[in-house]
Each structure stands twice: as C-alpha cells, then as structure tokens.
Length: 570
Ligand code: KIV
Ligand code: ZN
Image (cartoon, rainbow, N blue to C red; front, side, top):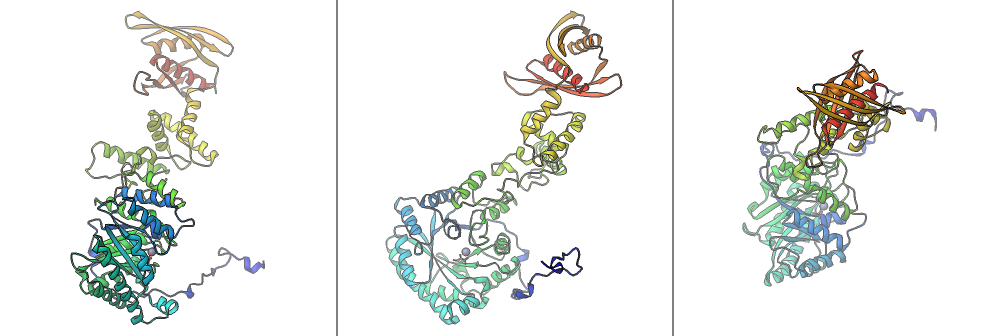
C-alpha cells in the first residue's frame, strides 16, 4: 500500500467521502394541509401477522411444517385474529400447511386466515384450491405498481398494469363466488406492491379500478394494503402519502386501509405508527420485525409502544420469554439483546446512577406513588412482560454501590449498612475490572463471603457458653483457636456480646470495642438464619467489619467479631 493511501482522517484535514452522489433524494408529495401530525394513536388497529409468509419467505432456512405449526399456535395464543398463513401457490409446504390447518379444524371461528397470491390466473385458482373448506379467508392479491418496476421489470404502461390487476380481480371474484356458495366468507385484500414508489394518483387509480370490479360495501369492505415494500424516505413522507391516498380514494368508506411497512431505513415501526395517525385501520407485520431484508414492521414493538401509553394493544404479550423462544426456534435467528421490550438487556442498568434512580423509582411505586407507572429508565414495568425487577440491575465495572447493594439485598436478603457498602463496592469494582466484565450475583456473594465471613486469620471460634449471672449480667466462656493452640476466655458484661468481647480483650490482649452492630433474620421459616454485621474499633480507632451467619443469633454475632478481628490481622 502506498503511503498516501494510508492517510487517515486524523492526518488529513479533508476526509474521505462516501459516494453519495450516486443517490437521489426521494421526492415527497406536497401536502401542506396535512392533518396527521395533530392526531394521536388512541386504539389498537386490526393486526395481521405475516410471520408465516413474509417472515418465512425471508429465512435462510424456511420453517419446517412443525415449525410453521408452532409459530401458528403462538400467533393464536397472542391473539392475532388475522394471520397470513402462506403463499400456497408458490410453495408446496405452504399449500400443505394451509390444507392441514383447515382439514384438522385448527382455525378458530373468530380467526381469518390470509393467503398471498400474485395477479395470475393459474396461481389464483391454486390459491383458492388451498383455502377451500376454510370459513373466513382474506385473499391477498398483489402486483407491483411502481414506476421503476413498470419500466425495468414489466415494461408495461399504466393502463396495462391496471388491466392486469382488474383482470386478476375478476378471476378471484369468480373463484370466490364458488367458495362463498359453500359457506366461506372471503375478503379481498389488494396490494399495489411498491406503493411508496408509485405515483400517488396512479396508486389511487389502480385501487379504485380494483374496487370497481370487486364492488365492496361499507359492510363488506375491501382491504387496500399500501406497502412500503422498500422503505424509501422518512416516516412522515409515508404518512403524507397515506393521507393523500385516503383523501382521494373514491368510496373510501368501503375500504379498510392496511399498512405493510418494511424497515430498510430502520423506521418500519415509526412509519406504521405515523400511518395509523394518517388514517390507516390495519397493520401487517411480524414478531420482532422478521421479514425480507431488514424485515417488516415489528408488531411486538408497535403493540408494546401502545401499551406503554395506556392503550389496550389487543395482543397478549405477557410471556415475552416464550415469544422470544418460539420465534428464535422457528426462524433460527437470534433476537438481539437490545430488541425493544424483549431483548435480554432492555430493562437492565449497569450504570450506578441509573441503578440508583431505578431503585428510588421502584420504592416510590411500591410505596403507593402515583397511580401510573413512573420509574426512571424503565418505560414499562418488566413484570408486565414476564420479567422481574431483580433483572433490572446487573453489575460490572460501571456500577457503583447501588448495584452491589441491590444484588445483595434482592438475591441474598442482605441489606448492608452504608459504611460497609462504601468499603465493599470498590472491592467489587476491582474484581469486575480484573474479570473484564459482568459479575453475576453469585460472584458478588462469594466475594462478600471471602471478604467478611470466611476470613482467613489467626482466630477461630471453637465453642462458647453463655450463662446468666442475674442482675442483667451475663458471663461468656469461650474456646478460641489461635494459630495452633486453643485458649479459653472468660468475660462478663451486660449481654453476650459484651461478655465475649471482654473475654477476648483480657485473654488475647486485643484492645477492641464494638462500634456498629446490626443483626436480622436472613431467611424466613424454621431454617431461618440470622446475619450479624458488626464493626470493631481497635485502640488506634481503626475500624474493621466482620459478618457472621448462623441459625443462632449469638453464634452469628460471635462469628462476626472473630471475622472482624481476623480482618484486622490480614
Ligand atoms: O412488501 C410487500 O410489498 C409485500 C407485498 C406482497 C404486500 O410483501
Ligand atoms: Zn413485504
């Protein structure tokens, strides 16, 4: 490589450029009197899952029949009432799957299956064959309408493309009449594929032409699905296109406007949301946004966004772990740890200040707080999607004392006094830095035990006996192992701790006093353990914490004293 090729932005004032001149900006339609920005989303739309079609079509390994079944069962469980179950004329697996759910009676009465089909007579016939026997069906007919595809793919005029769509609609109508004659209820969905890249007047013209053939009514509407087959501009541009379309569509009241966004620019959910504000009635999408290329609108995110605003999403998403597990199993794709509402890390704080704010917010909520959920950094209560408050705090080198306190309290029931916490949290931080990553609760607990409980040192408590001397005085006789020998101590005081300390001070010549002391039950029930957290001070006013755990409160206290003295000698 030549020296001049190795120049970096740091060495060279004029940075290298991406070939942006290759691209042209998407031209938005003028809509100065747009009304959608003043609207808000107040109710869930009609949801349609396209996991078994767009989602399946986009997989490295398409779903097996068993996986399709598993995904279908999950979609029913989540409450989808419209499910695109496949593209039966394009795939034998899809055809067989559609037949199996019909023949095995696996379609609930309130669920409508949807099947996708291109605008070609033989495919339409095959698709109708696939759905025969189903009670409620959406026949999803599509053809591409974009200027680019008309020019480079089909070499067709606008009139020819309209004829293609209306001829196909006639064919669908004929077949559907046969299905309806034997009791089926069939809705037509028409998609001008690549709608966002289609001239808006042409999109309206072709949809109106299809409607003219189909003859929808207010009671039996057609579904007009307006896809951003490839996402081409910011979501507001899509919303303008939709508002324009809806305003200009003849007999709008006979059509349900459906959206089917893709995510090429990373704004598939936002586009669907603004599209709802612009007047759409229905949303097609997939779990976690699986679908062609960058995927489809993620219906989980969109529904949970509504939920977080106090709107019933009309999907039941409480067991997010199960949804993730089934989606991962069927698609063989991993859900990202930062996937909204579902990823492993989305309710987790590593940063000390965030942990602290969450802890305070949670206490506020638990103490009655406001009626609505209000916890800093947590847009929803993790428990609503099957998570727990415990999982919100994880500890690495970025975490402070709040995180350590949280873990000890929530996983081990140990609530540390402030001074020992100030002393222990830098130990955890150093451990995490040395380890290079996250410390699991068990690692933090092990560090706590070896620092304050199982302290290696010269002293070991072998045995003791406490006896009452009357007059609120007690005596303590203890056997202590010091290095290799055993020593007997005797002390007296106002309680066992006083008496034990007096014995130690006299016999071992250890000048010390107890300066901080806390003891409480660690676990409930007959196996309850007491924990004693105590600090001693020596003659130079140095303080040492020690911790003892035992079923017996006195033993716990004595162990904590021995642990503290041992720490002094470390
Ligand atoms: O993205 C798209 O345009 C589609 C159509 C078939 C609706 O998937
Ligand atoms: Zn699509």
